[in-house]
Amino acid sequence: MSVVTNTNVPGAVASRHMRRRIMGFCLLAGLALAFLFSVGFGAVTISPGQILALLAKPLGLDLPWSYGQREETILYAIRLPRACLGMMTGAALAVAGAALQGLFRNPLADPALIGVSTGAALAASVVIVFSAGWAATMIAPLLPYLLPIAAFGGGLLTTLIVYMIANRDGQTDVATMLLAGVALNAIAAAGIGLLVFISDDQQLRDLNFWLLGSLGGVTWARLLPAAPFICIAIIALPLMARHLNAMLLGEREALHLGFHVERTKRVIIIMAALAVGASVALTGVIGFIGLMVPHLVRLVMGPDHRALMPASVILGATLLLVADLAARTIALPAELPIGILTSCVGGPFFLWLLMARREKGGW
Image (cartoon, rainbow, N blue to C red; front, side, top):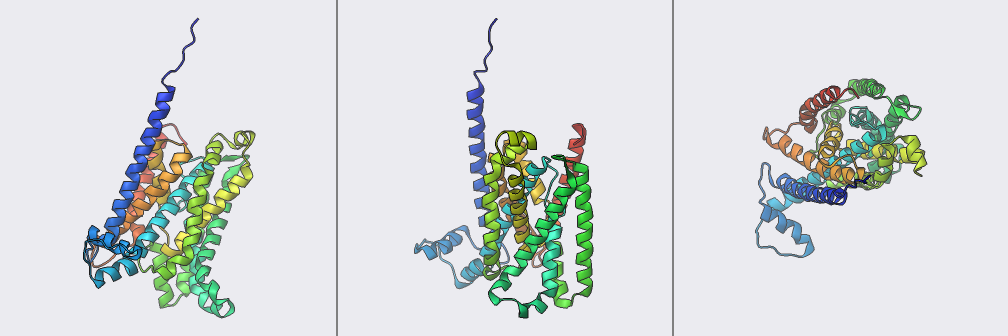
């Protein structure tokens, strides 16, 4: 009787690691190209050489590409903060989607689909409509943080409600999760509709911005107060990769492996709500990034969250930069809301995902 050993296992592991390194390099290269196109194209074109020269100027480097005051103003005052917001928001939505999919153990979980984004938008809308009356009673330095904190609270509350409804005896019922998301989206939409009804003209314009989603109008003054909240979530969620890998086996199995399951769930829920809430506070509701990106990465790199989470961060940032570039160049001089573009792509993608899972025999 002979014992058969699989001598190809080390080679297979090395091949998988090499494939992941190649994919990581391709993703980083794609992000760099998307960034250059994002800050370079628009009503005024800035060449890649001029971009590099302008970015090198604060470092004291003098590169051989000439530029004018107009290009410098457009890059630093308009396009650079917009590109930074696009990268942070895309990364935050994608990594939050990957984390929620791992927590619910289902690739259909998405911050917008289960109501997290809409809940955050409702809380942000309340601040928009009523903040003028609160300004006199609040400490002035706290005012810039009011909107991201409110959006975080709305996203956190919605995430907790969905989790409590869908989770039973350590198992998540997908149909219940989706139905709970539909119900919470409807409730939040009704609340936003009521706020639209009672708002004045300026507030109505601001609320329409939240409903459709856009990166337009961002400045460094608006971006910097929310940036720490977004960056904390982007950094913290990938650190939970080993915990999410264990959670894929089930909560009892993860507990037996030595992971603190309840603490893991709390951290993931809070960080996902922080990522989505702070992003929504600046961009409004941008759907389907959190659904599409982790699924695309999973198809190529597998379900290991140690590779899935960082790759989702990079691909999410890239896709949102590309979507924003398309939104502001397709109909020049007008600008399409970015939420419309992501929904046009994400809606058919979600239907395809549903049909593909049905063909495989259910959820």
